Image 1 (cartoon, rainbow, N blue to C red):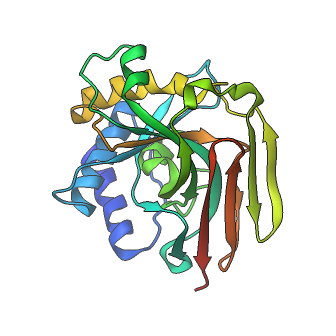
Image 2: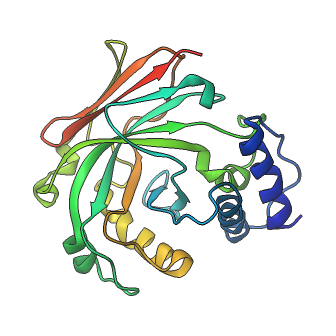
Length: 246
């Protein structure tokens, strides 16, 4: 099974706004990333990726990455009809103020970041068997990304004690997440050198204005159409999204 075949099935699912069932197994992460690139070229022709997601279960595993399919500035309104399932994650994203050189040290990356912003990732899947599909199929399917809504933030992100940082996700007035120091890597910046190197190899590197979101604080929470969600990180900012009913 080739990356082209995988990309063809996933691209067709995107265009038809339907789902497919995973079939067979991918060889490795490189094949999944190749499929991502081909899907992007087919559904977003002539455009460059300007936002990425990166993350991992913890700092003992290799991170994974994906382009963000849809980037919105909050407060945002999204149509429930655009999604098959609607999962929400409260996240911290970094916005670059300048381009990164191909071989950027951690200090160069930190200096290039203009601000840390609060974000809500909307998770969805083009896989009908998403509960049982392999990790590599999910990676090929943009690591379950559907959209990213960004909110307010701070340029003083280097002064934050991430282990003490509070995070909340509130849906229709009810608290879904209320955690402290819950980022899987402790400090989300620890993922930035990895994604900078990944993008340097894959897409020519991160550039001024690009957004990198760094994974969930408190996990994914599935919601119904018609809900309003707020992610709040006291001392940093907040983001909000309304999922309009079908």
